[in-house]
Length: 455
Ligand code: HEC
Ligand code: HEC
Ligand code: HEC
Image (cartoon, rainbow, N blue to C red):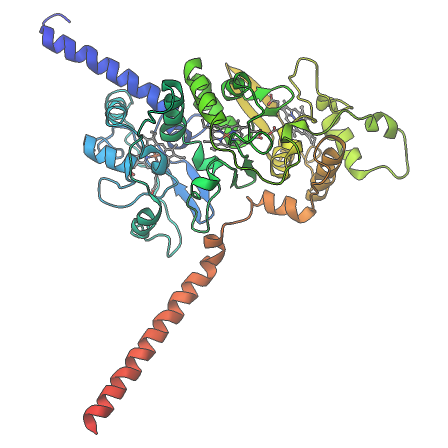
């Protein structure tokens, strides 16, 4: 600091604090989840393709590069893209960028994030590829209509009737960690459904983000605060659940790095989210028990369950023959497990297809992906996956849930597309028909007019 005036030194110190504050906020908001390409991409250089039912949306380069990133964004322009979903050039962003959640960010936190992205991130001058959605979704202006319908352009307002801890949790979950973008179901136009369905469960391709409202049966009401903190911090709670897929990513890149006080605040808030009940009879972690089928069926030649054969060959050496997993919990029990006790098979099938890959505290938790295993002998067919799923559900999980080969095919292909994507093939002909009709009507009317003029 030699040669620096006191005031300058003071500003420099505040700036470093502000940049560090912004860095922590960027972790809590998980900006890297989309803006850093997994497995070795330069931080925030973009290029990651987010598969949406309408096509892939490419995350932008948000490094401070002036040519390829957001280096020439002012604070106002940065705030507008974060909280209103509008780029510097005025074009609308697709809501794959979770501005519907970040819109709640405070001015102070937005400024801290800006300081971090301008001064704490290395510029990368390589532009990210452009997003190319098919017509009519390539018309970004359509998002202005979508925003008018669905974007609640409002900052977070603390609820004075609640504790400071609850408010901290609500802000973290809502404005930063954007839990609702995954856990709230979406309507036909892919917007989060209203307050009554808030956090009551949403589909994400092959995965399903379950109901995490306070309901004791359908939600997480029967989890203790400590269990929720442990899940968010490590991704596993013995006798309840493990995190795979998108939840594993949220934990790996973001949640495990939050201070315990913040995780506790999220848990306190979550347990008070108004419960949304569905038809389940008991909590999804409460199904199933160990079985002796593996031992009973061993050596039998006739009449053995095809699902058991797959289980015996591909699952039992890790999850053990009785399905109880290992003592140390490295291989979890398949009963008392939300993936097998849920009222839908998505997470069970998705886990078999895509495996588990979650690194916490530098330690990897790994289950192979049987759907696209590199070696042919490890790969399971859709039929085998349906068979082993039904076996696991019957032996260890919710026996009312059944899996067909068609279900596996649908989940392998990324789940059921939402209505708007299903309608796309009709939208283009629809517009053409409409245009032809309009031209016809116009022609008829002008002929009619001419006739009246002539007569
Ligand atoms: C779930 C994925 C996701 C997360 C998390 C996310 N973004 Fe984005 N972001 C995107 C995508 C996708 C785009 C490009 C959207 C488009 O082209 O319409 C984008 C675009 C942007 C843009 C516009 C840049 C430009 O000129 O194109 C900014 C700025 C931005 N993000 C900042 C952030 C910040 C800061 C965070 C964390 C607070 C963040 N994003 C978190 C997906 C994400
Ligand atoms: C990117 C999408 C995504 C985000 C963001 C996300 N989740 Fe999840 N979450 C999931 C998915 C998918 C699962 C199911 C994972 C599994 O079973 O392997 C899940 C599972 C859970 C579970 C376990 C429920 C059960 O019954 O097994 C809890 C609790 C949870 N999430 C809480 C949260 C909270 C709190 C936040 C925000 C701080 C959050 N999630 C953010 C996708 C997400
Ligand atoms: C090489 C060991 C291994 C094999 C083989 C294996 N698993 Fe797993 N499995 C794991 C690990 C490790 C986890 C995750 C543990 C954690 O998250 O801490 C897991 C998790 C699971 C989960 C919970 C996923 C979730 O999202 O909650 C299910 C269900 C499961 N396995 C089923 C199966 C089935 C069915 C098979 C056979 C087709 C199988 N596993 C084969 C190691 C294995």
